[in-house]
Length: 247
Ligand code: MF3
Ligand code: CO
Image 1 (cartoon, rainbow, N blue to C red):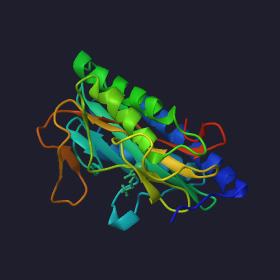
Image 2 (image 1 turned 180 degrees about the vertical axis):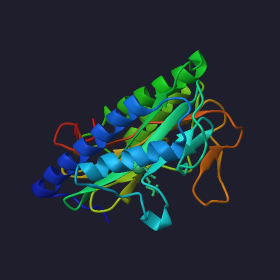
Image 3 (image 1 turned 45 degrees about the horizontal axis):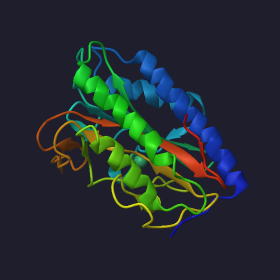
């Protein structure tokens, strides 16, 4: 069931989204080689709480941390642990913020230190594919319009588009309808309406788009061990476009 939000709910999501955006900016300043992913998680968690909000991934379906931190070949949902960030890593930090009853969801992939041009390009194109995808969103457009644009753009660079995970509605909870795949055909799928709030999140790989889930039940990695990047924002659909709430 798709939940169209009221103006009051959207206003709360604007505030939630700002806290999330600021958290990611703080993490970007903080992140450096030698830190463990657990230390980065702790830093983000503290900052969110200092803003009077909650990190809503914590406890979501039993998830054990405030953030998902996914290094190199880990695509998404990496559980913060004692893994040490190395010079040249690409590190995706993904988190959800709950404020005034409303959730927002966003992710960035950070290039730490001396990242190879090949990985840097992957991170860049992943972000660009997000903006290609949302170009087509407005009231009356369809979910397939987004995925088709993301896929065309990312594949034009020879990259893989992960199919096993997708974007989603967000707001009253972390994951709501509709699902928003990063591949597909324009002119197909659910219609988007003014006041819908969605998270668009391309997950793009250097090699195969095939992924597997670890025994921990969360960590998603590429089958071939090649790096992956992730970029995500929460937005509200408007009459003639989108308003991004986490930028
Ligand atoms: N952005 C992630 C997603 O949409 C957030 C998940 S919360 C977690 O899957 F608890 F699953 F980590
Ligand atoms: Co998400």
